[in-house]
Amino acid sequence: MLMPKSIANPMADRLRALIARGELIKMPCCFDALSAKLIEQAGFELTFLSGFGASASRLGAPDTGLMSYGEVLDQARNAMQPLTIPMMADGDTGYGNPMNVMRTVTGLARAGCAAVMIEDQVAPKRCGHTEGKSVVDRNEAIERIHAAVEARADHDTVILARTDARREHGLDETLARAEAFAKIGADILFIEEPYSTEEMATICQSIQGVHMANMLEGGQTPILPPDELEALGYSIAAYPITLLSAAMKAMNAALADLAAGQSTKEHLLDFADLRRQIGFDDYHSKANALRRRAR
Image (cartoon, rainbow, N blue to C red; front, side, top):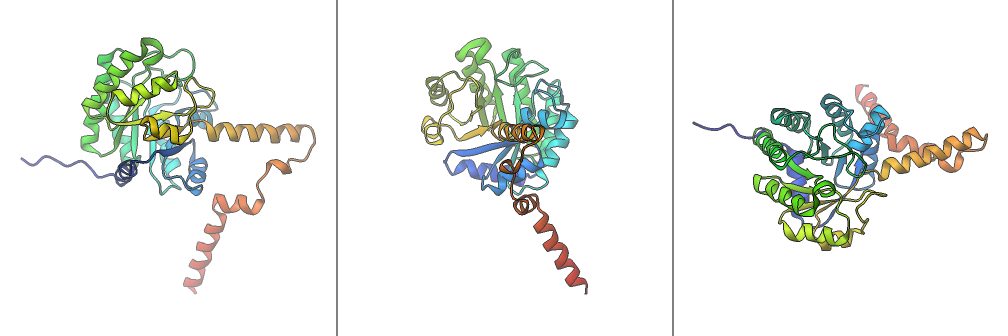
């Protein structure tokens, strides 16, 4: 009997092609459609819908497991609307048991996400560099990644397997989990919160595969330049809060000037640039072309 083939995902194929080049991929993380659009306009080839940023943008709340699967899926669909580059998505813990993990991966893959991240934290999960996080036991973590890989067999996507075991259980347990994830069939490995450059090197040297580094400014992991990350063995460098933090700083500065009765001009884009980046120029160009053809 013929077995059904996995449903194709062109964005997953494009992500694999980017990784196959063998160069470090710099990946600013988005949190909504506008931030995703700016990332592509700036020339980046890959983005990631950050759970930290999406929770802040959509709920005005911290990344502490408050967003539901449906809200994450909706945010991902919206963020991908203006994009022609691949976008990864944060599937958190999968939102339940292994069947829920499969539903989460399948739903985000059907939406067009190039990759889905599944992690081993206890639900409700936490941002990996904040207090209060803990992880499930190794067997349950492996079950989650098994479920994600099974879902990939039905609807293609890249599986990004994450472990947060470093803080609670040490590096040896963390490496054991990551190695198990790789053997199961995870495509990308993400060991969160290594405490030093030496630990980062050990991670990449100990386990063959595609590794992602998390360059979270102010977190526990050293912030290294791209060439050093590539030399250590990383394939992807994620910048999860850079745009959100920069945007909030700019908004706070503008609000402070407004409150003080001062000009906000130094904080603002030229109005023509604002319109262009949002898409007004393209919109009017296409609308005018349609009018001309209708005459």
